Length: 155
Image 1: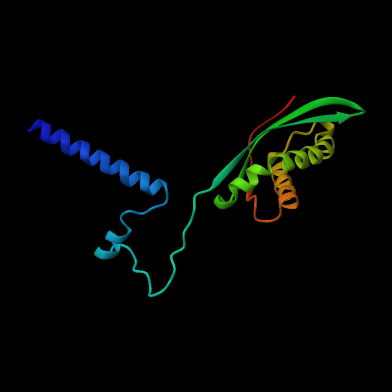
Image 2 (image 1 turned 180 degrees about the vertical axis):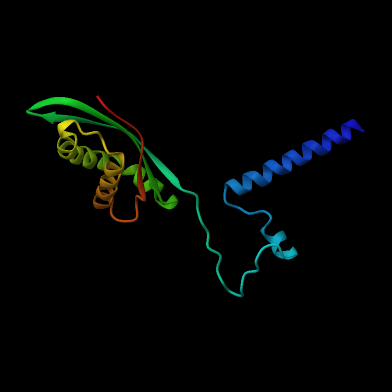
């Protein structure tokens, strides 16, 4: 009797893991069942279902920018970045990371000395928006959805 209970519990755990894994990968294993019993709204004849994909990211890594004032390196800004990209364009963006690194570094070396003047702090939202616009200029629109700053420091 105890073995049967353990077998049933193991089976239920395995099925739960399977269903959870399918949901994680964007597959609804209960969709057909729900439409048969009436819990899910029935699709009108011919209407296409909108497929949403989870966000995908390309790891950019560390962007280290020297802040040059009066012909001397006064500070060092370090920013860890991740790029939010459409799932189907991950490889293209990953292959173009060197182009983005060059563009980001050039732009930040001009922008940060002005932005950090008079003891002001680094504005992560402003930097993120600036890098997103720069990404669109470098790679074209639609390749990068967002530039996320994981961590930043000014030394």
